[in-house]
Image (cartoon, rainbow, N blue to C red; front, side, top):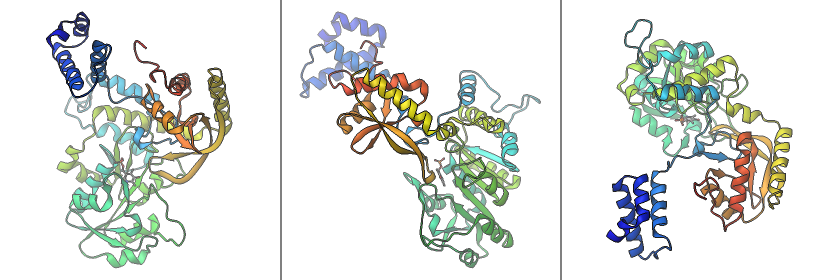
Length: 439
Ligand SMILES: *Cc1c(COP(=O)(O)O)cnc(C)c1O
């Protein structure tokens, strides 16, 4: 250890990193060698790599060549220019997040976005929280705790990971009453289940799957009528937050019919991770007063991005996800041909094949968007791994035993990097990191 520490090259590391970190890296390197790892030709270089790895961010940019527009594992929606600018403006400075600049009194962060949400959706009031899961949990906790909530068995969904409707219901302290069957639920099923203990009907959009065939579901309009007739609430989890008319399930229709509507900020809304709850003022106020509201409070950077995204909608500026979704096949074909030519110029012969992209993120299941893929030569698994481990990382799609790239989800200004990444990944003798300093 002492001799390693004295090596002249280590001094240069000490200039770059705190002493303690350098000592740790040396210790780890020597231990790895003792535990069977051979001594590398250049030990200082190995130590330097360890340090570099420790101090590089682990949350990294990824080029999404999967064609899944709202890829949950890749952060769902990329933010618009306006939203990125808003985050940058607010992040490094002070802001009026909880200050009313007019009166100089303490302000409410929620009030910063209620006007724009009202104008956009016609909702009486709104509350924005950490994500949609939190919005539903908060709605149930604040509005139906210790009461019964009726849900169709066809809507007992798992959204991903551990977000299952029965679990959220239990956590909120509400009692779930299931009605109907997986494929069919009728209005009479809801009506028959209503008792004096019933607090609400809950509709959950079946975001990530579709039941086809012998099916029957009760329309939101019918559910609203039943709820109104029996003096109970209708809570509607629309999931993806589609603002455009004609895209199901529509936020606007839900706001008109349900007492509380919830959805995500980072699906079809195209903003940051957030949950929006829209509804009658009295109900939204009850939600805001719950201690849980504080626990799921939205952060100021998210709020900045969310407000900007809502302004985009108000101004009719399509979000990046919406623009990607709308890209025409012809333009994608041209870009694919250009990529094929650029790769050929570097000795890689790829080809263009027809396929389809999907919206993803638990929105519009079963809807395929025609696209073209650039199919790369070589063993797909190994190539995909090298692309994924490169910097920037590239996520591709395996189709017909080839590693394929869908340019729908690749920004045009990422294409040069993409070419460099493919060139690096296609040659196993090279480090697969074209941007690595010193390579
Ligand atoms: C995606 C989704 C959720 C979860 O939303 P998050 O914002 O990821 O918490 C809940 N319900 C439905 C119907 C969804 O589609």
